Image 1: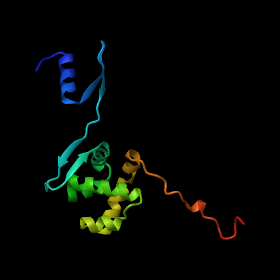
Image 2: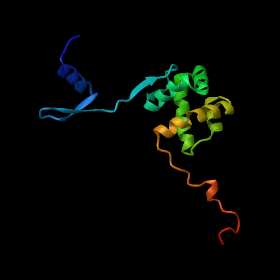
Image 3: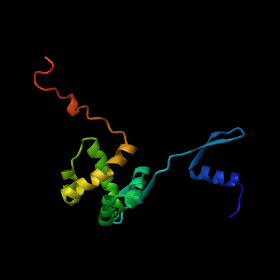
Image 4: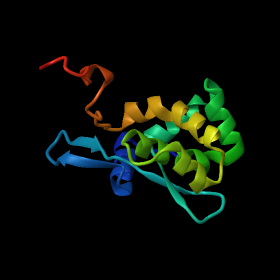
Length: 143
């Protein structure tokens, strides 16, 4: 299919992928954020493909724990685990709750949550819990 650059750009505008930010010549465009939804094999849940999920899938090549989890639970299962990993780092769930909800062993839940932890911190805002061992004073130390 042949066409000019303008033809292709206009198709992208019409598809909602980019938008015009300046109508005067030369026109300026900006890319819109695209979110794709894919339905899991069971058909009962919908997952959003995000850069974090793509990164997690890509790490199958270098992370045996993620690779094993995907082999056993599929990409949809990894998307679910990523959701739990975010909630865990935000202090809302523990690995045992994930294990119970997904009917997997607690060690399997902990393993994948640990593997996904760097991805969570790279792509999501996680507030510091506020305390550390260094913040704890020995009894009578600061009196």
